Length: 379
Image 1 (cartoon, helix red, strand yellow):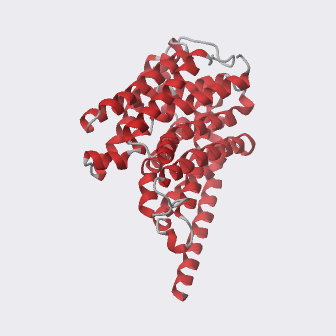
Image 2 (cartoon, one colour):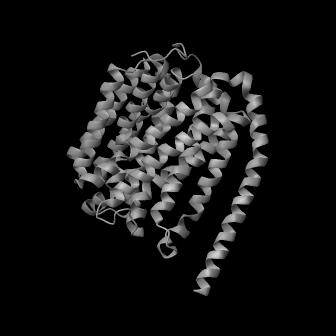
């Protein structure tokens, strides 16, 4: 089991299985809203605590250097089991927000020991020349795993407790695979992580890493807004691929998981060939444009363009840049002192290209809207 290709496949499988619990509650928000009498604002508490828990868990793990002090595959296995346990407890005992919110927060905190550590494991089995594509495949698996509850809900038409139980069982399978089969690779020797907390502050004080971090932060805000509310948007728009009840869950899986996986693979492939910063800038521009255009396309049925086609493209575009930010962050971790100036120069050169790309895209969008309104008036 020391074959690099096999190990990369196992690590990707672990992430698919473990991340099923991430948006498990979001996938059943319509059912929970009806049963628990939740308002639209209260329904957001099915997702927000997971993200908050993940942030706190990631910061705590980084400060304590857990990924360096504990064998990474065992850390992933333990955290996946704990996240699965929290989800199972919610499925069995939750009867309102008072019980659900702390369990969702704990789920997010434990997932911080899965996703980032899997990135480290994937990098340890990937040579630098193909690392962007490997990261793209891994982040695509995150998208696929996050969308699994939507598929379960759409195919089985189960009640919300059964959906959460199935997601928890999937994450428990990730525990078995990680603990029994995954091992660290040879690219990075094991270390004790001395002084890493000081390094994080020093890195953020420099312009290059700070720009990457802020861009990633803004993009994640958009991405998780899309992932959280996409099922509700599909239901409200009345456009599904099959037209049957429950099809919004399948469509959400296609837009989040399948399109997200395709976008990540495309981003990783383009980054290795066209340049990381340039590809990330182009992907962010397209994804941001989709976000701005989404209110217009929400009524796309009158334009004879299925809303699902638009959100599928949006789901693909939103994930193209993610592996690039992950790769750049990992690159800075490994080569902070010697390559920081090169990154700054690359970002400066890319700024001009991204500016012209944005202008061209804006002109195209405005022209398209003008043509459409003119045809609508003539009709």
